[in-house]
Amino acid sequence: MSGKRRGFPLELEKVGTPASRAPSAAREPLRPQRLLHQAALDASRLATPSGLGLDSAHVRQRMIDRLRAEGLRGEAVFDAMGRVPRHHFVDTALANQAYEDTSLPIGHGQTISKPSVVARMIGLLYEGTNARRDGHLGRTLEIGTGCGYQTALLACMARHVVSIERLRPLFDKARINLAPWRLDQVRLVHGDGMLGHAPRAPYDSLIAAAGGDDLPAAWLDQLAVGGRLIAPMQSAGGGQVLVVVDRSAAGWTRSQHEGVHFVPLKSGVV
Ligand code: SAH
Image (tube, rainbow, N blue to C red; front, side):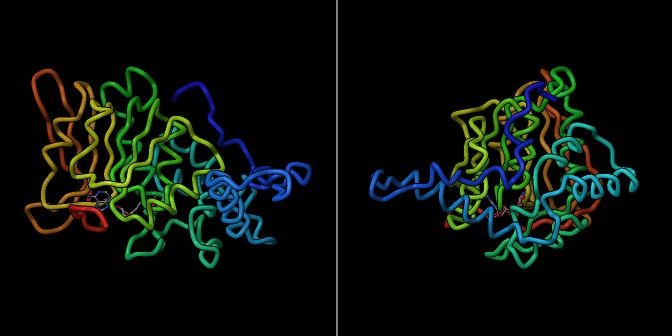
Protein backbone atom coordinates (compact mmCIF):
# COMPACT_ATOMS: atom_id res chain seq x y z
CA MET A 1 0.00 0.00 0.00
CA SER A 2 1.50 3.34 -0.91
CA GLY A 3 1.23 5.54 2.16
CA LYS A 4 -0.26 8.48 0.29
CA ARG A 5 -4.04 8.53 -0.13
CA ARG A 6 -4.92 9.89 -3.50
CA GLY A 7 -8.21 11.60 -4.00
CA PHE A 8 -10.60 8.89 -2.97
CA PRO A 9 -11.62 10.00 0.52
CA LEU A 10 -13.61 12.63 -1.45
CA GLU A 11 -17.37 12.13 -1.07
CA LEU A 12 -19.22 12.47 -4.36
CA GLU A 13 -21.42 15.29 -3.12
CA LYS A 14 -18.27 17.33 -2.42
CA VAL A 15 -17.15 17.00 -6.04
CA GLY A 16 -19.76 19.50 -7.29
CA THR A 17 -18.85 23.01 -8.43
CA PRO A 18 -19.51 25.55 -5.67
CA ALA A 19 -22.17 28.09 -6.74
CA SER A 20 -19.64 30.93 -6.42
CA ARG A 21 -17.41 29.18 -8.98
CA ALA A 22 -20.17 28.05 -11.34
CA PRO A 23 -19.10 28.58 -14.96
CA SER A 24 -20.40 31.78 -16.44
CA ALA A 25 -20.47 32.22 -20.21
CA ALA A 26 -20.23 35.97 -19.75
CA ARG A 27 -17.04 35.88 -17.67
CA GLU A 28 -15.17 32.79 -18.92
CA PRO A 29 -14.42 31.59 -22.42
CA LEU A 30 -15.60 28.01 -23.07
CA ARG A 31 -12.76 25.52 -23.13
CA PRO A 32 -12.90 21.81 -24.08
CA GLN A 33 -11.49 20.91 -20.64
CA ARG A 34 -14.32 22.80 -19.00
CA LEU A 35 -16.88 20.78 -21.00
CA LEU A 36 -15.25 17.49 -20.05
CA HIS A 37 -15.11 18.46 -16.40
CA GLN A 38 -18.75 19.56 -16.48
CA ALA A 39 -19.76 16.27 -18.15
CA ALA A 40 -18.00 14.41 -15.34
CA LEU A 41 -19.89 16.39 -12.72
CA ASP A 42 -23.19 15.73 -14.49
CA ALA A 43 -22.37 12.02 -14.74
CA SER A 44 -21.55 11.81 -11.05
CA ARG A 45 -24.83 13.50 -10.13
CA LEU A 46 -26.80 11.19 -12.42
CA ALA A 47 -25.22 8.13 -10.91
CA THR A 48 -26.12 9.22 -7.40
CA PRO A 49 -29.87 8.84 -7.16
CA SER A 50 -31.14 10.50 -4.01
CA GLY A 51 -32.59 8.25 -1.37
CA LEU A 52 -30.51 5.17 -2.19
CA GLY A 53 -27.91 6.08 0.40
CA LEU A 54 -25.16 5.00 -1.99
CA ASP A 55 -22.82 7.77 -0.93
CA SER A 56 -22.53 6.17 2.44
CA ALA A 57 -19.27 4.45 3.23
CA HIS A 58 -21.43 1.92 5.11
CA VAL A 59 -22.80 0.39 1.90
CA ARG A 60 -19.28 -0.17 0.67
CA GLN A 61 -18.21 -1.52 4.06
CA ARG A 62 -21.07 -4.06 3.98
CA MET A 63 -19.88 -5.25 0.55
CA ILE A 64 -16.33 -5.65 1.93
CA ASP A 65 -17.61 -7.54 4.99
CA ARG A 66 -19.42 -9.96 2.68
CA LEU A 67 -16.26 -10.48 0.58
CA ARG A 68 -14.30 -11.18 3.79
CA ALA A 69 -16.98 -13.63 4.91
CA GLU A 70 -16.54 -15.47 1.59
CA GLY A 71 -12.87 -15.95 2.51
CA LEU A 72 -11.31 -13.23 0.34
CA ARG A 73 -8.27 -11.51 1.83
CA GLY A 74 -6.24 -8.37 1.08
CA GLU A 75 -6.41 -5.26 3.25
CA ALA A 76 -5.05 -2.95 0.55
CA VAL A 77 -7.75 -3.85 -1.96
CA PHE A 78 -10.48 -3.70 0.71
CA ASP A 79 -9.23 -0.29 1.73
CA ALA A 80 -9.45 0.88 -1.92
CA MET A 81 -12.91 -0.68 -2.32
CA GLY A 82 -14.01 1.26 0.74
CA ARG A 83 -12.99 4.50 -0.95
CA VAL A 84 -14.07 4.04 -4.58
CA PRO A 85 -17.85 4.45 -5.13
CA ARG A 86 -18.69 1.58 -7.56
CA HIS A 87 -22.17 3.03 -8.23
CA HIS A 88 -20.51 6.05 -9.83
CA PHE A 89 -19.18 3.78 -12.62
CA VAL A 90 -22.43 2.06 -13.67
CA ASP A 91 -25.63 3.33 -15.29
CA THR A 92 -28.17 5.03 -13.03
CA ALA A 93 -30.67 2.21 -13.56
CA LEU A 94 -28.14 -0.31 -12.17
CA ALA A 95 -26.77 1.84 -9.35
CA ASN A 96 -28.83 0.04 -6.68
CA GLN A 97 -27.07 -3.24 -7.63
CA ALA A 98 -23.60 -1.70 -7.55
CA TYR A 99 -22.66 -3.15 -4.14
CA GLU A 100 -23.90 -6.67 -4.83
CA ASP A 101 -21.34 -9.25 -5.83
CA THR A 102 -22.37 -9.29 -9.44
CA SER A 103 -21.02 -8.29 -12.83
CA LEU A 104 -23.08 -5.59 -14.56
CA PRO A 105 -23.39 -4.45 -18.19
CA ILE A 106 -21.47 -1.27 -19.06
CA GLY A 107 -22.64 -1.08 -22.70
CA HIS A 108 -21.07 -2.19 -26.00
CA GLY A 109 -21.42 -5.86 -24.98
CA GLN A 110 -18.95 -5.45 -22.07
CA THR A 111 -19.31 -5.90 -18.30
CA ILE A 112 -17.80 -4.55 -15.10
CA SER A 113 -16.37 -7.55 -13.22
CA LYS A 114 -17.81 -8.89 -9.95
CA PRO A 115 -16.22 -7.27 -6.87
CA SER A 116 -15.12 -10.71 -5.59
CA VAL A 117 -13.23 -11.40 -8.85
CA VAL A 118 -11.63 -7.94 -8.81
CA ALA A 119 -10.56 -8.44 -5.17
CA ARG A 120 -9.21 -11.90 -5.93
CA MET A 121 -7.19 -10.76 -8.95
CA ILE A 122 -5.72 -7.69 -7.27
CA GLY A 123 -5.04 -9.80 -4.17
CA LEU A 124 -2.99 -12.22 -6.32
CA LEU A 125 -1.22 -9.30 -8.00
CA TYR A 126 -0.15 -8.07 -4.56
CA GLU A 127 1.70 -11.32 -3.97
CA GLY A 128 4.15 -10.61 -6.80
CA THR A 129 7.80 -10.31 -5.74
CA ASN A 130 8.15 -6.55 -6.34
CA ALA A 131 4.71 -5.75 -4.88
CA ARG A 132 5.51 -7.67 -1.67
CA ARG A 133 8.91 -5.97 -1.43
CA ASP A 134 7.52 -2.46 -2.01
CA GLY A 135 4.09 -2.76 -0.33
CA HIS A 136 2.33 -1.43 -3.45
CA LEU A 137 1.70 -2.52 -7.03
CA GLY A 138 4.41 -0.25 -8.46
CA ARG A 139 4.24 0.52 -12.16
CA THR A 140 1.00 -1.09 -13.32
CA LEU A 141 -0.54 -1.91 -16.70
CA GLU A 142 -4.28 -2.64 -16.98
CA ILE A 143 -5.73 -4.14 -20.16
CA GLY A 144 -9.45 -3.39 -20.63
CA THR A 145 -10.34 -0.13 -18.85
CA GLY A 146 -14.08 -0.64 -19.38
CA CYS A 147 -15.92 1.85 -17.16
CA GLY A 148 -12.77 2.64 -15.15
CA TYR A 149 -13.79 1.12 -11.79
CA GLN A 150 -10.81 -1.22 -11.47
CA THR A 151 -8.54 1.56 -12.77
CA ALA A 152 -9.67 3.70 -9.82
CA LEU A 153 -8.90 0.86 -7.39
CA LEU A 154 -5.46 0.34 -8.94
CA ALA A 155 -4.81 4.09 -8.65
CA CYS A 156 -5.12 3.73 -4.86
CA MET A 157 -2.55 0.94 -4.79
CA ALA A 158 0.03 1.66 -7.50
CA ARG A 159 2.75 4.21 -8.22
CA HIS A 160 1.58 4.68 -11.79
CA VAL A 161 -1.23 3.09 -13.81
CA VAL A 162 -1.48 2.82 -17.59
CA SER A 163 -4.90 1.51 -18.62
CA ILE A 164 -5.71 0.55 -22.21
CA GLU A 165 -9.18 0.24 -23.79
CA ARG A 166 -9.82 -0.72 -27.43
CA LEU A 167 -13.41 0.59 -27.68
CA ARG A 168 -13.51 4.37 -28.11
CA PRO A 169 -16.95 4.87 -26.44
CA LEU A 170 -15.77 3.02 -23.30
CA PHE A 171 -12.44 4.85 -23.31
CA ASP A 172 -14.46 8.13 -23.34
CA LYS A 173 -16.81 6.85 -20.63
CA ALA A 174 -13.89 5.91 -18.34
CA ARG A 175 -12.28 9.31 -18.92
CA ILE A 176 -15.50 11.03 -17.83
CA ASN A 177 -16.04 8.65 -14.88
CA LEU A 178 -12.50 9.21 -13.57
CA ALA A 179 -12.25 12.95 -14.29
CA PRO A 180 -13.69 14.20 -10.95
CA TRP A 181 -10.70 12.73 -9.07
CA ARG A 182 -8.00 14.18 -11.32
CA LEU A 183 -5.77 11.14 -10.86
CA ASP A 184 -2.33 12.34 -11.98
CA GLN A 185 -0.88 8.85 -11.63
CA VAL A 186 -3.31 7.35 -14.19
CA ARG A 187 -2.81 7.40 -17.95
CA LEU A 188 -5.73 6.19 -20.07
CA VAL A 189 -4.85 4.95 -23.55
CA HIS A 190 -7.20 4.21 -26.46
CA GLY A 191 -5.38 1.31 -28.14
CA ASP A 192 -4.90 -2.41 -28.57
CA GLY A 193 -3.84 -3.78 -25.20
CA MET A 194 -2.52 -6.96 -26.82
CA LEU A 195 0.51 -4.85 -27.73
CA GLY A 196 0.96 -3.70 -24.12
CA HIS A 197 2.31 -0.16 -23.74
CA ALA A 198 6.05 -0.09 -24.45
CA PRO A 199 6.72 3.61 -23.55
CA ARG A 200 6.12 2.98 -19.83
CA ALA A 201 7.48 -0.58 -19.63
CA PRO A 202 8.65 -2.53 -17.69
CA TYR A 203 5.66 -3.13 -15.37
CA ASP A 204 5.76 -4.54 -11.84
CA SER A 205 2.08 -5.52 -12.15
CA LEU A 206 -0.02 -6.32 -15.22
CA ILE A 207 -3.73 -7.18 -15.02
CA ALA A 208 -6.09 -8.05 -17.88
CA ALA A 209 -9.90 -7.92 -17.76
CA ALA A 210 -10.38 -9.82 -21.02
CA GLY A 211 -9.19 -13.30 -21.96
CA GLY A 212 -7.77 -14.92 -25.08
CA ASP A 213 -6.35 -18.27 -26.13
CA ASP A 214 -2.87 -17.37 -24.99
CA LEU A 215 -0.93 -14.53 -23.35
CA PRO A 216 0.33 -11.93 -25.84
CA ALA A 217 4.13 -11.94 -26.12
CA ALA A 218 4.23 -8.16 -25.47
CA TRP A 219 2.81 -8.66 -21.94
CA LEU A 220 5.58 -11.15 -21.05
CA ASP A 221 8.27 -8.91 -22.60
CA GLN A 222 7.01 -5.79 -20.80
CA LEU A 223 6.88 -7.45 -17.36
CA ALA A 224 9.69 -6.30 -15.02
CA VAL A 225 11.97 -8.80 -13.32
CA GLY A 226 10.13 -9.45 -10.03
CA GLY A 227 6.88 -8.45 -11.73
CA ARG A 228 3.63 -10.41 -11.83
CA LEU A 229 0.95 -10.69 -14.49
CA ILE A 230 -2.61 -11.95 -13.98
CA ALA A 231 -5.06 -12.62 -16.79
CA PRO A 232 -7.97 -14.85 -17.76
CA MET A 233 -7.04 -17.38 -20.45
CA GLN A 234 -8.55 -20.38 -22.24
CA SER A 235 -7.31 -23.56 -20.55
CA ALA A 236 -6.40 -26.77 -22.38
CA GLY A 237 -9.60 -28.26 -20.94
CA GLY A 238 -11.74 -25.64 -22.69
CA GLY A 239 -12.90 -23.31 -19.87
CA GLN A 240 -11.40 -19.94 -19.00
CA VAL A 241 -9.04 -19.85 -15.99
CA LEU A 242 -6.97 -17.25 -14.18
CA VAL A 243 -3.30 -17.47 -15.11
CA VAL A 244 -0.49 -15.90 -13.08
CA VAL A 245 2.97 -15.33 -14.55
CA ASP A 246 5.97 -14.31 -12.44
CA ARG A 247 9.13 -13.04 -14.05
CA SER A 248 12.47 -13.62 -12.32
CA ALA A 249 16.03 -13.18 -13.57
CA ALA A 250 15.85 -16.84 -14.65
CA GLY A 251 12.72 -16.41 -16.78
CA TRP A 252 8.93 -16.72 -16.56
CA THR A 253 6.92 -19.08 -14.31
CA ARG A 254 3.26 -19.72 -15.04
CA SER A 255 0.61 -21.01 -12.60
CA GLN A 256 -3.06 -21.73 -13.20
CA HIS A 257 -5.91 -20.86 -10.81
CA GLU A 258 -9.72 -21.13 -10.65
CA GLY A 259 -12.20 -20.90 -13.52
CA VAL A 260 -13.59 -17.45 -14.49
CA HIS A 261 -15.86 -15.85 -17.12
CA PHE A 262 -14.38 -12.78 -18.79
CA VAL A 263 -15.22 -11.09 -22.09
CA PRO A 264 -12.95 -12.01 -25.02
CA LEU A 265 -9.64 -10.26 -25.61
CA LYS A 266 -9.84 -8.84 -29.14
CA SER A 267 -7.18 -7.27 -31.31
CA GLY A 268 -7.39 -3.88 -33.01
CA VAL A 269 -9.23 -0.74 -31.96
CA VAL A 270 -12.80 0.44 -32.64
N1 SAH B 1 -12.18 -3.75 -15.44
C1 SAH B 1 -13.19 -3.26 -16.33
C2 SAH B 1 -13.81 -4.43 -17.04
C3 SAH B 1 -14.15 -4.12 -18.44
S1 SAH B 1 -14.60 -5.54 -19.43
C4 SAH B 1 -14.20 -2.42 -15.54
O1 SAH B 1 -13.98 -2.20 -14.33
O2 SAH B 1 -15.16 -1.92 -16.12
C5 SAH B 1 -13.14 -5.80 -20.36
C6 SAH B 1 -12.75 -4.71 -21.31
O3 SAH B 1 -11.64 -5.17 -22.08
C7 SAH B 1 -13.81 -4.31 -22.33
O4 SAH B 1 -14.10 -2.95 -22.17
C8 SAH B 1 -13.16 -4.60 -23.67
O5 SAH B 1 -13.49 -3.66 -24.69
C9 SAH B 1 -11.69 -4.53 -23.33
N2 SAH B 1 -10.77 -5.20 -24.25
C10 SAH B 1 -10.90 -6.39 -24.90
N3 SAH B 1 -9.82 -6.62 -25.68
C11 SAH B 1 -8.97 -5.55 -25.51
C12 SAH B 1 -7.70 -5.19 -26.05
N4 SAH B 1 -7.03 -5.95 -26.93
N5 SAH B 1 -7.16 -4.01 -25.67
C13 SAH B 1 -7.79 -3.20 -24.80
N6 SAH B 1 -8.99 -3.47 -24.26
C14 SAH B 1 -9.58 -4.64 -24.61
